[in-house]
Structures are given as C-alpha cells and as structure tokens.
Length: 401
Image 1 (cartoon, rainbow, N blue to C red):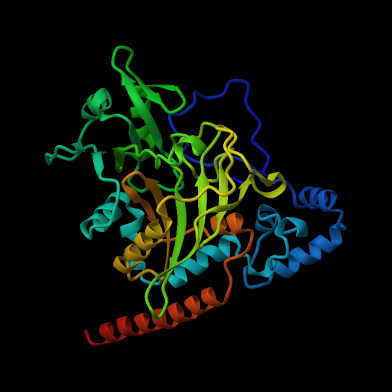
Image 2 (image 1 turned 135 degrees about the vertical axis):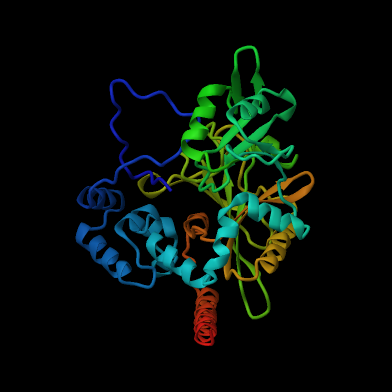
C-alpha cells in the first residue's frame, strides 16, 4: 500500500512513456523527525510525548513501525475516538501473523494463483468470475480460452464482442498490472480504457509480455448492483471480509468496503482518491468513510464523483455475502484467516478474490480500531497449537521412512 505521508519521487524533465498499467507503488518515506514535527503540529502534543508513545507501541503486541504509527494516525487521539492503540497490528507483524495462522503453507499457492483459486471455488458451486481467456505464450496445447501467442492475444483484444473486459496477472497482487477495458477501435489499433483513456494495443501487449508473460487473465467486467450505481458509479466496489477459524467452524470476523473514485480502475485503497468505508457489521450499512492515510486522512460523507450521500448506504445482500464468505472458508478449511474480496451484483454476491495473506490494515483503517482482541487471540493460540501438531506429524512420518 502506498501511504499518503510519503513524498513523491521528483519528476524528470523527460519522463518515460506511461505504461498501460501500474506495476509497482511509488514514493519515498519522509524522515522520522519531519513526520514527528508534523504530527506534533497537527495535534498540539509535544514531540517527545509522541515519541514515547510510539516506542511503547513498537514493543507492544502489534510491533508497529514508525511508518505504521503515522499511517494509522495513531498520534491523533481525536481521530481514533478512544480506540485502544495497542490493538493495532503493524505491517511486519501482520505478515508474521498470517504466516503463523495459515500454517499450511503448501496450500498458499492455490490462492496466489487467481485462475487456480477461482476454478477451485467454482467447482464447489461458489459464485466466482469465470475466465474468458488467458494469455500463456509458448504453449502448444489448444483451447478456446488459451491465447498462445502475441498474434492470438492481439486478435482477441480486437474483437468488440469480448468487451467490457478486466485483465490481471494470474498471480496478481493489489491490482498491480490490472486493465479495465470498455472496448476497442480496430481502425486505430487502440483499446478504450475506463475513463476514456486510449491505449495502443501493441504497446499494451508489450507491457503484458514484459511484466506478466507467465500468465495474464481476462474476465468479463462485472457491473455493480443496480442499487449502488447512482451512489458509487459503474466501477466495482468490493467488500473485504475477513473470515477466521473457530471451534464451531469459520465465521465472518471484520469487514471494510473499498470504494473507488477519481478515475481509478480498481478499488484498492493504495490508489489515490479511493476510500474505505467502515460498516455496521450487523446491517452492512456505512457508518464512516475514510480517504487517505496518515496526515492526509479525512472523513468523507459524499462520493466525490457522484455527489451522493455515502453514510447509511448499505451493501446489497449483506447477510448472503457474509454467508458466501463463510462457505468459501469451509472449502478452504486449511486456512485460519482469509481475506475475501466480494462484489455485490444484480445476480448476488460474487467472489472476486480470496487472499491467503490478508492486509489487516484495510479493516483497521475502515473501523479505526485494531484487529487484536479476544477472538483474534483465541484464533492465534488455536492455530499455533494446530501448526505445532502438523509439524510433529510430518517429522514422525519422515522418521518412519
């Protein structure tokens, strides 16, 4: 995630031509001294007081880095409205926790590969987005969905009936490498992207081959539920639902609604202008909306593109959406925690992605409270015990060989 307190890289006088899609985040971190002075100026708290607080959190259960401290605006008591800062988890601790909780690392590859995970879930009858085509150059097998060469990919992209399309790497991450295409212009050899931007088809294929030759997936672009279009526009806004394992089976634990804006092709929060909505977990209605992180965090009440009121807007089929996530977690029983990206459509909730190493930052920002709590502690203890037993079984099996 690119954090808004980071300073942008200086522009060169002759920038390179823009790529068809983002392949990395930009930015460089401001100095600790500069950030601390800025935090003190915004809150009125003495810098040394803030430094002591940060030091305490750095050695606490969430192992927060200074970057995390700023990102979550933990220096601002008013923003958090009484939430326990010690419940927040930092990025590095987040990674360590999900690796420990999801101890069956042999299953991680299934969710890393989006084609494999979507096919696996669909086979169990769960609602997913079927693949329209996959670009995998060099293969000799034949399939009506397989694009085996640059020429086949170009021909596919020049067929108007294939649109609208959403493209992403088979091993996608945070929407990097994503394409949202509304149509094509065969006469000019251009692709028409969301927002009216035109992309040269050959340059786009160059970018795909350069960065994602291992596999690039094309799917039909979903349209959001009809009750949402007036408020959020035509772009898909997915809900991140965290499911956790319990002794009684998986349950929906936390959620945050990712709202796209400012012409972004995807709803990932790291994209400037996008927002995160905190929900009433019982009703699925928006309670608050946050834009930006760190020093640029602010409350939002109306969608910046449509002008529509966001507070009180409900996720359609909310109970059903949570139920689909829980059913998916049953199918992926070897994972203790999963981050589901779910879309509300006219045909019901659809699984866009399932994440084996979910970023807790999304729900922490949406709810303005950390993930650490009794339920999470119980999950961690249970998965640690199960992980230790799993390792013991493996060692015993090896010893018998």
